[in-house]
Image (cartoon, rainbow, N blue to C red; front, top):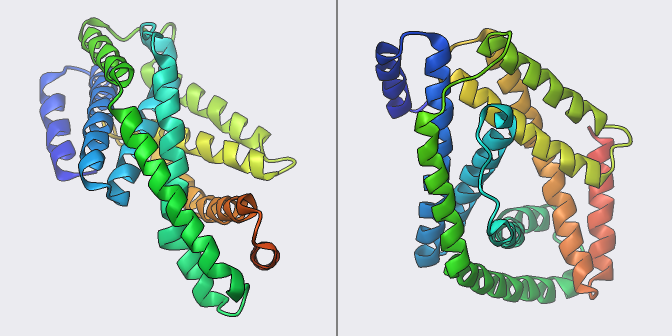
Amino acid sequence: MPRTTRARSRAVQNLLPNPEQQAWWFVKHLLRTSLQDTRSLLLTWTQTRQTETLHQARVAWRRQKSLLKFYRPLLPEPPHRHNDALQTLWHLTGQLRNLDVALECTLPAWRQAHPDAGTHEWAGLVQQLHQDRQLARHDLAKEIARPRTTARFQQLRTWMKRLDSVTLKVRRKSFEKWAQHRLRRLHRKIKSQRHPFTPERQHRCRILLKQERHALESLLASQPNKKWQAQLKRVRKKQIAWGRAQDMQMVLNLIEGTGHCPDLTHAWRASMGLLESSR
């Protein structure tokens, strides 16, 4: 936990009389912070075009969405106007993030390991992906600047202010037991996606794992729990492993999408097969 968050945690613990109020304060605080971080990082990205800034904006927004979903039974109904604006924005950030990861991480590492594969196709592929990234950057910057995008973030900020007057309402059980029930329910969803483990189901599992991770982080921000801490460690480890497999599949999709790289497509598929057999 960052030092500022630990200090804030101690301050809140001194002010709020019981653990449930502390936990509820942190939920609302993390919701507001993740929304603020998403907006400010996206605006910063429009000036810098830095890959890491976009990545952190996506992390903040994923945290926001995960917390909203996990704590939905305890929250007032959020506004739905202009929902499509942020859906479009999220889709564009995903497209650009895929290209960033491919060009800056996955492709260079793979090329170093397979220097003789598809040599006559390599330059054309990289050139095409750089062009695609430039177009994706333009589209994303344009979407961030749209009035409907600004309006949607403003609606959510207004809704967040209402949370200060919302009290914790968990019927017939403690907040900790309620959270444990929600975590078990989420874990069952993850397990249900594993058979058959197709790329689509793997992608769905990664999304659910991120939800589980952010839920656990939010709970641990206000109260220590060895079981939750161990669970969070397992989730992070699994998320990293699946993320690498997802990156390989994503680049394969990009290569196939060009329609001009049969040799690289074959070599990439073969390398993925080797990766799978070595696990």
